[in-house]
Image (tube, rainbow, N blue to C red):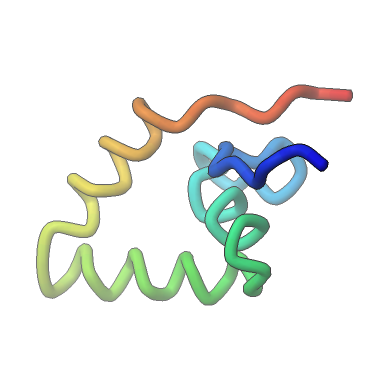
Length: 63
């Protein structure tokens, strides 16, 4: 069995696939991850964290 990896999603992507990948990794709805990022962007550094994750997270394979 292959270990679970945090990857950007190809199927649940709106902008970069970061929230979709987080949703798939933690088995939560990607909309919940998006709401959390929007709230942290309004009240903190969520936008910066999203950009960093977008750069650092590898993209899932397209197969």
